[in-house]
Amino acid sequence: MKTSPYQPDQTNLAYSVGVTLDRFIKLKQSDFPFASGELSQLLRDIALAAKIVNRETNRAGLSNIGGAFGQTNVQGEEQQKLDVIANIRFMRALSKGGEVCAIVSEEEDEVIDLQNNSGKYVVAIDPLDGSSNIDVNISIGTIFSIYRRKTPVGSPVTTEDVMQPGNQQVAAGYVLYGSSTMLVYTTGCGTNGFTYEASLGEFFLSHPSIQAPKDGLIYSINEGLEYEWQTGIKNYVRACKERKFQSRYIGSLVADFHRNLLKGGIYLYPSTLKNPNGKLRLLYEANALAFLIEQAGGKASDGGGRILDIQPESLHQRTPLFIGSSAMVEEAEQFINIPESQI
Ligand code: P6P
Image (cartoon, helix red, strand yellow):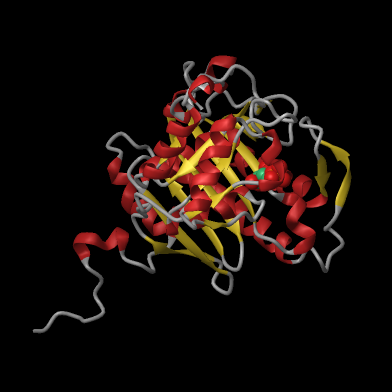
């Protein structure tokens, strides 16, 4: 009797392209011997919210939900209508699921305590990063980090649960609302990418076990801020140009990160006069991408050390971010750390 030519490779079924996200989560749950399914359900809750935000994003131009909301967030940034919609959608999904006790969101001044002390997990999220690009149809993204709470389940949420370094993440990921919509996430066992098929309402495994190229020829930085950079950054960018590297800067972090993850490259957002500690936020932007890139063999640094080792001191704390191919990040760190006296 011949075996079916259509039977996926059973030994590696989880990584068979075309496996749905739900099936992948279920198959990979066995990686966590004590898993009781809450984290798996939480990932499904996030994926559901992503499908809804994807639909809203795709319709923005037709349903009068593009443009500014008319308020600013805690960052002092003008909120777009879709920022507010995405925040509401993810808040609802994370609240209803029952697995989460607290949420840190770019769009919320304070920690959202869900009054669900039985929830094991804390989520830090940027519901819609790069939203100023919505009206000009440039890719935007959702970025999320998941932590296990530090205080006992059943007790009230405290700062200790929320202000954890990135090396304590149990999962992290992003959704890229681009030419196709993708969800890329890690639970510490590699980085895997799923592409959304809207007609079926499913994410399908399309990029199993992503490995970032160790080196690359693409650098991503806002060159309009050159006069605000420290000398080491100026010298590094000049060295990229001398080697005829490609400059690619979309101005949407998730899109720039995703390209560099797949093709090799480095994204740099150094300290500037306007943002002396960098522009990007540690808890709900840098930490998630740092976890993902390290799981894919890359690096993420603040110029002086590993992003994931930074102990947060405030909710909306910013950090310089140098992230991507390991060899490129290491070289950039060398330029950054040359003493000014030796330059
Ligand atoms: P700049 C979008 O506002 C964002 O947070 C990231 O998505 C993006 O990479 C960065 O800021 C762009 O900042 O200062 O270059 O416009």
